Image (cartoon, rainbow, N blue to C red):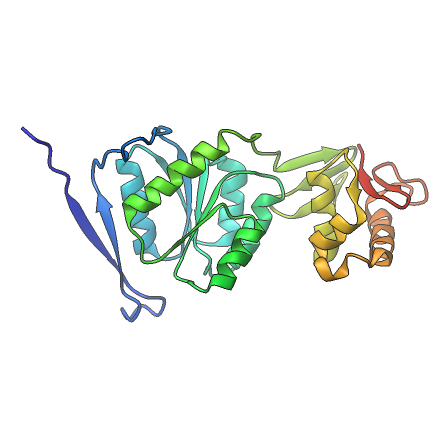
Length: 267
């Protein structure tokens, strides 16, 4: 007797809740892997979407295929879940209530190489390029087919198996504690307030701690490619960071300058 594969459609309303952007997400039950594709087996998927119907449909479909699912309805919850739950793949909507999806990508990429598959109704090519450049691994446009999404998740998981695992969300360097997921720094028992620019520098140096980060690379990461020649920016901001983070700013132990080359975080 031949097995029958059933499909059930889920209806999701648009962002205004009035059905103006109606989408249909199809659930495929017991759909076998495509021919020639080796299934990576069950993985832990973090689904970040503030639309409860879309999140529910994804949870049901992923669980039906044996995957473990964690749900997050906003960016802050997603960043904490990525740090605490260590998912194998992240499925991320861009339009979140508290943070833009690109900010979530940047936050995760500060310490983790976990595959990120963006799932969004935004179809502008320039925005897709910006999201991929920010660190996303794939981009699926809504409305989407569940079979295609599952195939892309399998592909992302396979690619991740060939690269080093995720970094540490909380890094201790001497008396400094850097929480990359929460974007917080403590020196001893005291929390240190950093500006967004200062945090961008610290995040980059922590991600490459013990290694030289070139001036141009750091300027490009924090300010953008048009500022690659503004080495004076780094001198000003590194001086500020040493006053905040070093016990003796005049003789720094952690924020080290390599003259004419760049900076290194030691500890």
